[in-house]
Length: 623
Image (cartoon, rainbow, N blue to C red; front, side, top):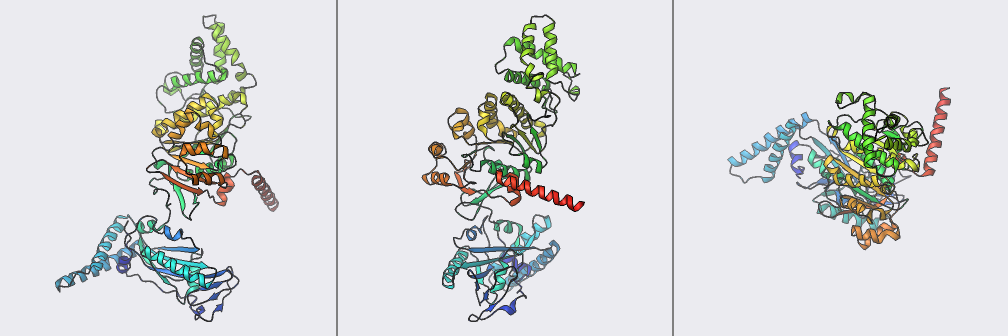
């Protein structure tokens, strides 16, 4: 990547402007002045090239010279410096009209000087020729709207406990800057201004600026990790901070060979916290997410982002399996009839006999016909039948005395608990909440164990219909939290296998999260899920499972030790794309994100009490 800096400053005629504030505070190297700062330290001593703070000393530098060509994340070595080093980048955009005028003017000067030298027989000025080429390239980029110009200041502040240690730290930092072809000059007689320029105050008191174009400025941002390949996709997500450096770990699952992931951790290691954090950040990127939530942990997140929350099994929540999806082909009605046979088989907890399948297929189509729904797609928008309508049709067939009467009567009797009995809650009426939106959460906590398999099958069917809908193709992620609960059911296990194998073809990814590594590592299904997951995340592991996990993921002894001693939220990201990308990271969240994704009961109780107090105070103020 080109970094047009030295030539650009000549091109635009922009030079470093000395600051005007605070010069009267500079003292000689022997006598310092005490300056009280309102929000800073209680006092400090300003020397010629350093500041004496209550907790130590510091020295600041302004970068005045830059290389001409750099790569992405070229400032990363400064951020991973083992000592305490503050790095501050100040950015001011240059108006396009001003930049274009100065470029044209300086380009004319450079071309004129080059022609004059050629006419007089002088040697070519290669620096001037490089500046002219850069100016022409920038002028073309600005004219096409491909980029902009910025005035950028880069400042460094080195901290140490005393002056003796500071001298050594300064030499090491300047050597590091020189290795990057950066010319770091001390802020002599302006130590206070240099220090304040590196504080998070958005105030540049030095004013030593150079000109960057858009590509050079983007390359200066240190959003890379030494353990991972550069992010190439459109949906990068910040996973956290590198556990062994101050770099960041950014990963894009949709830029890998497949979009699936598997997250393994012991209970309490933070796997649901991390998964919810990634879900929230993928929503920022426009990814549609569907979640199977067995413990109702995603409700607060869903409510905050205006998602769709469906609490299967809760009072008054109905999910009608007879609903016909829109825009999914001419065989929609036939596919729905076939799915209903699978659903009825799950309700009866045994495979259907051929006679039962025949009578059930006849009853299902008859139930649709009673509602005016047939093979004509224009009729599919009419209200769909419910399970009680199917039972009515089975009773009708049983009363006709035909050869199928016995099978129909048997089906009607065995479906009675779901129609009029204690299991009818989920099927008692039309669907109350449609599973549509950018975030759809199916909560299974309220489902009794007797109907959990049926409710889970309904949720999985709705998710698969959304993923496989060719009329609505977009980036999607299906999150299966506590996947061990799903893998105990035959239909749930088959769903995971099918989605892991074919999700990529539908521009979707599967995120499997489980605390029981044995469920994945000891079965053929689990091995298939892992083999088809290009993103593998390992958080803290139990000693009983670490050897099995180490064999499955080819962990080193150091990585095993890290996973055994990892704190909550710390983990190992293993990418299986190009190369063997691995990075140990610690998940980080903002205060607002943390409040949405945490499940700590103590914190949640505190938030509820705070919200109740705030509501009471607001009502009192209104009265």
